Image (cartoon, rainbow, N blue to C red; front, side, top):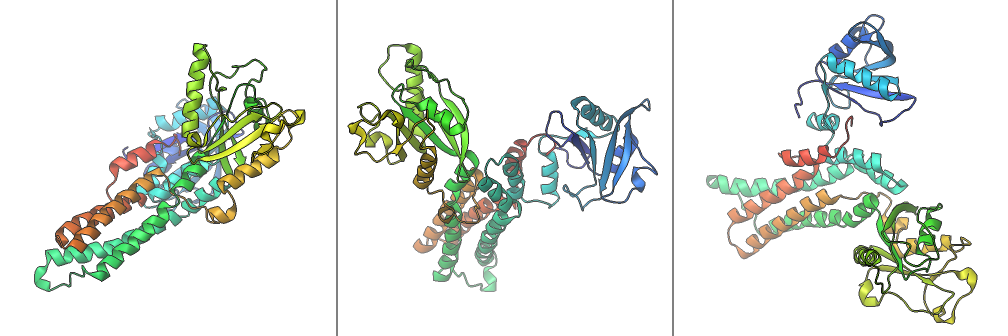
Amino acid sequence: MILHDTVAAIASAPGVGAVSLIRVSGPDAVDIADKALRCKGGLKSQPDRYAALAKVVNAEGLVVDEVLATCFQGPRSFTGEHVVELACHGGVLVTRRVLERLLECGARSADPGEFSRRAFENGKLDLTQAEAIMDLISAQTDMALRAAHEQLTGRLGDQSEALRENLLGVVAHVEAYIDFPEEDIDPDTGAAMLKRIDEVLSGIRTMLSTAEQGRIIREGVRTVICGEPNVGKSSLLNALLGYERAIVSDVEGTTRDTVEEVINVKGIPVRLIDTAGVRESSDQIEQQGIVRSEKQIELADLILEVVDGSKPGKRLLTDEQIGGRHHLLVVNKSDLGESDVWAGHHSVRVSCREEHGLDALADAISDELLLSESAWGGHAMAINARHQDCLKKAAESLGHAREAMELGTGVEFAAIDLREALDAIGQIAGRVDTEEVLGVIFGSFCIGK
């Protein structure tokens, strides 16, 4: 990215709508937009943050569209630069023509995530807030939305920065002791120094404890619906979704591949994965589907094991196969009566045909996963995989530094580990040189964000 020129891109979602938004940002944003627009007194004479009615004209002077143009003088803008936003009509062709005109007048087409990257580079956002923008856009539940808002306000960045500042004091003291021996600086490598390191480690552990919550909030609970053929797995998927997503048939082996959809349970996205019925089969295609089913079961956060309650039978999975993961036994076809075989089993009774017991199943899923507000906490602040990796590296380095101090192997070795921990924590909010990290983060954004 070249961050000192002027860029333009469509900032609204692709497709046809009433209005589309085009953003221009950079030192020449107003001059470039003024070349493409015709408005009373010229765009440069318009007050800051005032929506002016203007016409976009092409090189031949023909009107392309009528727009509302708003200027934001830097640094009082999203990117911290001069910004012009054009609200034009939402047709695909007209929006593209307006953008093409701005490019003709001297703007460069923005790269994916470049507006947010510029906001970061100009101190308008830290990295955690930039990531929260994508979390906010992709949020599928109220809890995910709330977690994204918490991060967007800078709460996560503030917490990591507090840890970093605490550790920075330790690093500064140790390095001053090493670099200026003539000043008789107290090395402070005894109990007091270890206590300060332990305080940082405690804060790291607190943040790491939210990693699993963050994964679930962003990705959903991986929930596998499994069982023998014709017990109603696909019917259960359709019933929970409220529409027919999977093909339902009395013919065994109808489901050959996994079918995946997402539902909302108590504010948490639950990714339902319908699998092929597990049985002995000589059909090669069905065998591949069964292998995939077994792999999905191994990867599941929650297993919904479905059985036909109207017939005598046995469980598909043993406790060893479940392996301590969340598991619910779903006894289907309760409208046909229940075999005595299932009487002693702790399970949820449902009828997919009559749509009976589905609310009870949703409550059972919530209880099994502890999705209550008291269990998750009201703030819903949760770190993502990148934050988790940074914190783990910091904790490991602090552990090495602590060990060096306890063993007395030398404060110089501890200083190296403390510096590595400081850099790792700084990468969370982007307080160190993180060019490679920046490329990965902002490269995941879409054009115009």
